[in-house]
Amino acid sequence: MNISVTERQDFLRCRRMWDYASQNQMGLVPITPPATALYLGSAVHHALASQVNGQDPLEAVKTWCEEESEKLSAAYRSRVGADLSRAERARLAESRDKAIAIVRNYFDYYGWKQPLEDEGLEYVAAEVSWRLKIPGTNDGFLAGTFDGLAVTENSGVWIIEHKTYTQANTLEALATDDQMLHYFWAASQLFQEPVIGVLYDGIAKKLPSVPTRLKSGAMSRARIATNWATYKRALVEADLDLEEYDDVRELLVDRPNPFYKRIRVIFPTSSFACLEQNLAELYRDMSDPNTSKYPNFRWEGCWDCSYSDLCKAQQFDGDFDFVRGTQFRRSEGHRTVLTYGKEAQVVKSVYDLQRSAHDRRIFPDYR
Image 1: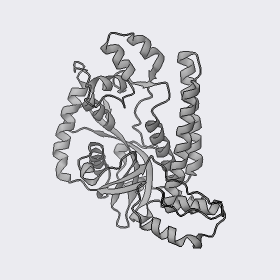
Image 2: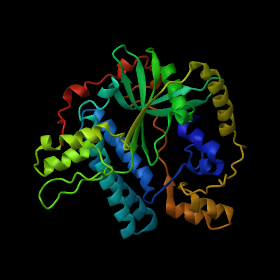
Image 3: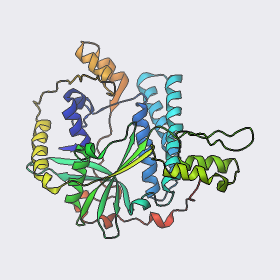
Image 4: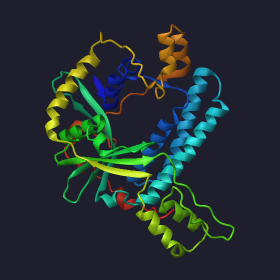
């Protein structure tokens, strides 16, 4: 049986929710538009991966949003017999516009050609799916997908983990991050090159403020929550001389940036023995057909759970079958094959995944 890294987390958080979501169980996904946070995160991840593969990330995120909206609308019409409501369509459009703005701002800030250059890293591949045998089991496999893989000049491997956030994480919290630790373990099993650590690439969901143009034609120098990339774009669009705003550039460049946060996390390999033991025990619980599937109603509520209506129907003896039939569909399942068509188990070097996309990038430094 295949289990994913995120599926493990679902099981530990709430077994009932895991039963609904797991491809090994009901495998349900909502047919209505997902929460804005989920939509934003998926759209931004797609754009960042497209850039690594030599595509225009802005065009990629626009296309992804259009296709995803059409898939959601078609699924909703098929199951419900009606179109999405005006409010739901408006929410999708708002999420699309915000995703496009986040992607544009990200590359304006880090650069359209080599966004990891300041870290001394170069992308090797993006969206790399893998599957590994779980030690201590007969038929258990752990599956996952690296957001990105990068290398240093001395061939050390870094896993890139993109995260959109409302509140940025800290090194102290990331040092025990379950998902990142399992990714680090998996990469260490897969590749012959030394795996150095994980780069947390945090991207704020809050957009930098756009400066106001004054009646005089000049750009306002008032202090606002912005960065130089956004301010510079406003100057260029207004056809103003950048040199006249060197004071603003220096202020914004020196000011701590609240919109992006990169943290390098290095995990000790001595943690692998405990990880493998816990992983095997957890797998046995998850694969046991008699395992209990009880709910976990957390004290802070279940506001971020996509299955709350279904859970309430089950908990309070509602029409469970009706809710499941009208609001959910079967998911497509795990991605356990590498993007480039190779089984993860046979890949022994990150350079097996090397692409020449960086040679084909033609994006300007400014958009």
